[in-house]
Length: 406
Ligand SMILES: Nc1nc2c(c(=O)[nH]1)N[C@H]1C(S)=C(S)[C@@H](COP(=O)(O)OP(=O)(O)OC[C@H]3O[C@@H](n4cnc5c(N)ncnc54)[C@H](O)[C@@H]3O)O[C@H]1N2
Ligand code: MOO
Image (cartoon, rainbow, N blue to C red; front, side):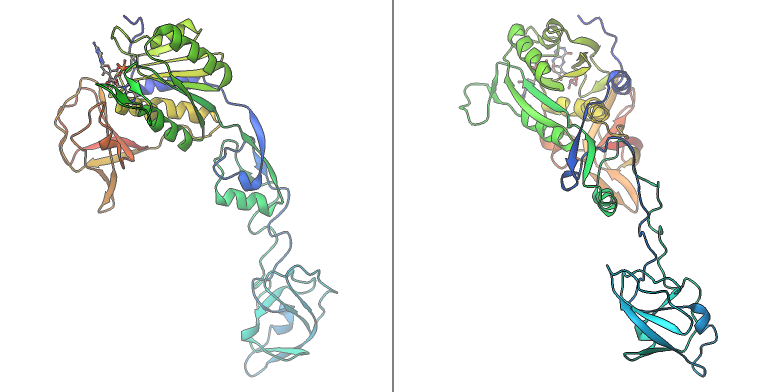
């Protein structure tokens, strides 16, 4: 009999979040940065662009020279040289002069505007304009994109293409990131058979291992399968202990409930894991146990695959995200309109899984009736969890609940 008062999944999650620290850091090459969590704030050392730049192929000139230009009064300027992207400007442009300029080239001193070549009449030596230009017209000013000192990537940001582009434009080739948590996955239960082995009697294949490994990868962790531990508390404890020694976190499935062979909480305690929560007021995922050893989280999830995955999304994933250095570890909550019924009521919160659809601009979900704690088929394609409050009766189409993407 557990001495722990069952908490809601939010309370459980928040209790673990209040304890979890942040993993160490390492440096990666910029080309390896996508999806990694940036460690520390990275600011711009230089402006982008770092010089006034022409956005067109055309002519750079002084706007005062063409202030009175018109069809009846065209102004002709002498071309003094040509400048293309990557070149250094020659001498400053004086009155009556222009520089032939190509897209991306620096606007030479003296010139303060650019005219596209198709809006001019030109030959090798001169260019004629029949309309005025404003000061700074068609000039991309230095710092228009990025100012010096600007925050390019905040601590805890998951790097995407834009972050990588901004760092590349600053010439930053090596980037500090948080290490990816190395997470050991342990399956318990003497009924389990590994995929590839012969199934006999009522034994079943180990499915949780693969589902957890997939979701661990999706949230930035590196999964390591530590093996099957049967139902012997000593064997489970040994594997948990070795895994905690050599990894950053451990996820165990099975053996957390009230049965004669449910030894995981006991095994966790035997290894020195301090248990913080046992049992959660949610369905599925009620059977679960959470603790820490030396700052490393140890998650004991149900053997039932859908229960284990629900606990993973609701409790473990935010904790692992914070551990992995992410700035936003909680899922964003959204309002979800139910487009179908779900017949069961629940004494505690129930998390229904399903696929999001957008109907007339509204986020919707049609719950599958197969929401059992061992039903994996209704998880296929599911990208949303909807939270039905404790005490709510059967769900009817048209009701709106909080939900989060998984
Ligand atoms: N007397 C009670 N019995 C049960 C309770 C309860 O409160 N009192 N809770 C039920 C609920 S709810 C759940 S969920 C399960 C949780 O059980 P355990 O976490 O102890 O898990 P097991 O008994 O080991 O396994 C449950 C189920 O899942 C299958 N399993 C286990 N591991 C895997 C795996 N790696 N891949 C696929 N399937 C797996 C296992 O064979 C069992 O069928 O307890 C209820 N009972
Ligand atoms: O409580 Mo079990 O852990 O609901 O499916």
